[in-house]
Length: 319
Length: 319
Image (cartoon, rainbow over all chains, first blue to last red; front, top):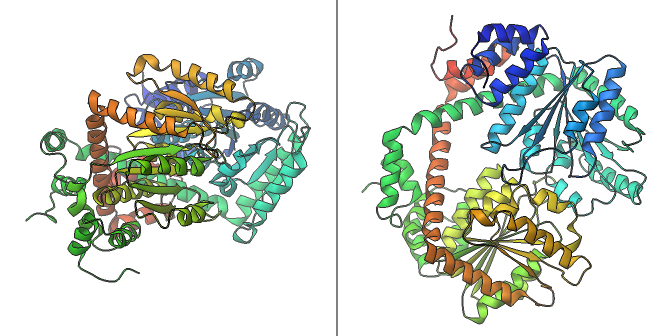
């Protein structure tokens, strides 16, 4: 539990780059405690400074190792780095990201690095919002670079990646069928692609396959994503990737894409907040009971369309 | 385009098991053409008879081949089978399910089998609703068994599987890291598990791994999912799987789980319909313009929370 305190003060401390206040604000937001929206609202004007990077790919592709190398890359030029490691694994099978503790120890003495893990509690949709809000707090807290790191290749990861300015998609030479399922979404949202563990057989082939697939989308975009061979364990290829991330950020600024992305995200967030509130206000006790009653009486005779209409006070089907 | 016709008549023809009318109604629903909700509403009381089976797993695991064997299994006892093959692959990378044409030809002379493919058009959420509605039409059209077949292991597949009574999760011995990402959801929703291509090395190991993972959830459920070794290309093991599917259906009936599932699904559908309508009605021209104006003027100074509140007519943050 977070102690009751003046939330205006907490927000002020976050923007003064107080790390302890940041950690407390992150917990406040993650637990959706009273007043958390006020803190986010107060800090919002100070966001929009950080470069937000998304890193995703199949389990075992080496995302944590690559992230560590990118931390080193950015720290060399004194950029501060916030990491949001998101595991949408359900609570049942356990959600800890392996190696996180190791990483936290490695960077424990560097106040320019801040790592936060998030796992699913309730809805997956909520996780996307929380990741975005955590990034806002780090952004307002003065971090130059924020990295979203997700495990897996599902819809949820794609949604989280859409909160990033620059998306790095990671794969490995032996990913096999994974490419098929990656095509379902990540191929389209990646700005940079990495074939990690490039010392393994098939790395060049994988690179060529990816380049071919990316070639197909060339006409649609002004930025043609590159494919990089890395051995992030040795640090080989990762500086080149870091430079390309910065080049992509520059491209976003120059082309006006950055502003467009920000606007689209803002719009999406407003729509989501409105949707949540409309639903919350609609499902009062009376309507919830009406639905319950409908289900208890002749559930097979009346369609969900008709019940929805009745709840909405419409009589399209009456009579 | 579907010719304008009396939709009451169309619904009547569907329930008289007219296959041509069914195909027409499916197109009507998939394209959300005028009056499609009326058709679904009229037919709803005739749904709830079919056993709805979900089959999912990674690309290349042999879902189509397994589905074909299950078709044979059910046809042996004169059960009619409707297949809804869903490919959530985006329109950009192409969404055709390979082998579908082959299967359609194989079963073209059997009026007891009906295959329908669906791909993403707009939102992925819409795909789940459409799959459910297509199943309702087949159900009202008298099919005894309906199989949802999806490619991949993402959130969308999990959502579609939740529309099924019995979920079969398919894997192969060399799936490797795929198991990791399967754990994120499919392990929990599977009622039966198949290690396909069981002649390959590692099949027994995979079976043992799955059984161990399933053992962990044993305490939570009264039905303990089994793991089956199959070689669906040869038809080995698939009849045993078919029998277990029927045993699971029996278990659902006897335990009252079937009714609970149906109710939960009904509730979910009503909630989704209400949500869609509330959103649709909320975002009138005035509100859409208000959001646009906010974005054009000082977008960085005002938070999405405040804009949402203003749109909702609240003044929590004013002053």
